[in-house]
Image (cartoon, rainbow, N blue to C red):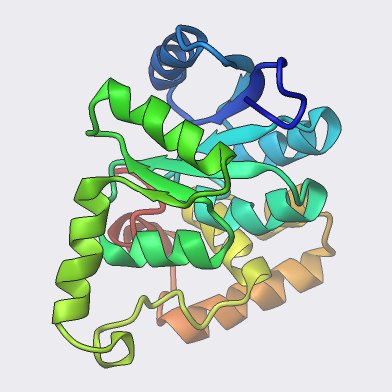
Amino acid sequence: MNAQGSQPVRVYLVDDHTMTRAGIRSLVDGLDGFTVVGDCGDAREAVEVIARDKPDLVLMDITMPGLSGIDALDQVRAVHPRVRVLMLSHHEGETFVEQSLQHGADGYLSKDSEPEELALAMKAVMKDRAYLSPKVARGLVDGARQGPAEERTTSRLSSLTPREREVFQLLAIGLSNKEVARKLDLSVGTAKKHRENLQRKLDCHSAAELARLAIREGLLEE
């Protein structure tokens, strides 16, 4: 239940797979105390809807074209600071979990979890308790046993600014400088400058190389 007590928790789904959204919607709508108020396959569009409709809980995928769930977190927090966000992903590695939590996620659930765990996770985050599925928690423990985080290999994207990460994903799906500029409300010159900075920082000099890196980092699917 949310702060209103008798009112169901209003849930919004963000996942670029239509079948996945339909399955999650069915699971959530079958639970007492929760109702799905909308869903979307585009993270950037979802931020606009969340700002307008103010759901209580957002279930967010990570790997999506154009803007990843991790990069959308900051924008979601900016437009609706009190919303709870539960990440749902096939990625169980510590890098994804740590980045999600650092950007404001309240919990992280593996998509390979049993359906019953989704209810546990949603109830936990709505009670201000962080939730990590056992599979995800094991990954964090294994990572900790390898030594301090700064001694392990870091993501090639860690040096990018939030805006550069947005531009990176748009370029990785094949958008031109002009299309990126229009999508992000930038000048073409600014978009071009971001592209040059990305190529230098990431040592990627074509859209194909950017796409391959995005796939390796788990931000795009093959």
